[in-house]
Amino acid sequence: MINLDRYELEQDYQHAVLPKDHPLVRGQPINTPIYEQDYQWRLKIQAFTQGGFEAKAVLVNRNHLNRLINLNRERGKRPAPKEKDEEATKRDLEKCAYRAARRVRHLCLEIRADRLLTLTSRNLLTDYDQLTATWKRFMRLLESAGESFEYVAVPELHKNGEHYHIHAAINGFARVELLRKCWQIALGGKGDERGVDALGNVDIKSTRRKGQHKSKQAIGVAKYISKYITKSYIEHHQFNRKRYWAPRSIKLPETMAEWMQAEYLADAVQELYSRFDTAIMVEAVKDRSLYITEANVPMIFMRYLPSEEKPLLTPF
Image (cartoon, rainbow, N blue to C red; front, side, top):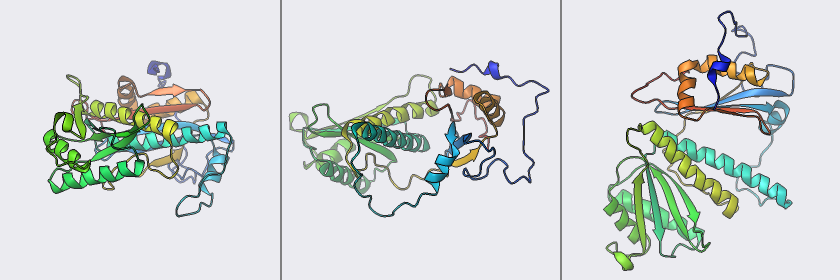
């Protein structure tokens, strides 16, 4: 946890700002550097439709980043990856898992997911394609019954390694009896199976604690679901198989990315402190989302979701 008092700006401190008509002002595309050195601080902000954001400032090699941005990528179905050694394969999987977990977390926060839905079967869903078809059938049945909701779903292989079950973050109230009926039919039953005759089970629960605001509840659900996507990628990755499902109606606002004016870690903290305002930074500290790491790559991460008690303005 960072102590913000350490970075209190002095009254006579003048934060370095480029002239408004300068070609390298803040907000330029991320492949337009401010300084000449290879490593520079880059800020990425993912805003959410209902307010709030996630921000990440990271020290990146701009030359390497530019090569990735300007790389000519083939369109269409991805070819099978080239054979790599075990260490390189593990590293690539970890990168994929990180990107997928970030995407799943953002989708959960976008819909303000407040409940966790778990769908299981009696050793029926042993094939991934079968699992996907069953989930699609389940969602079609719910839609026909007039029960539709936004979701972010992640399949997980059971610990015995023989069959799958599904975890889903959803928003709003859902009728459990209807969910159970549709799930039984999706599994191949009639919908009225109970007890030992049931082909599977439906469990839905809220993670909200007493007195906890919905914004923090959404953060808890997002962390919970993203944990499963990370585990799924690392332990049971299959090439060209999507590891999470979400309706296309969920549209995240465009991510903003820009170079920062800071050259060092302390400067980056000061710049964020002045950019996002004291109240926003303190709120991120209380949420335990603000942290700084200097492991392999220095990074500053913060999150803010407004609540009814503290409806702070989003700083952009």
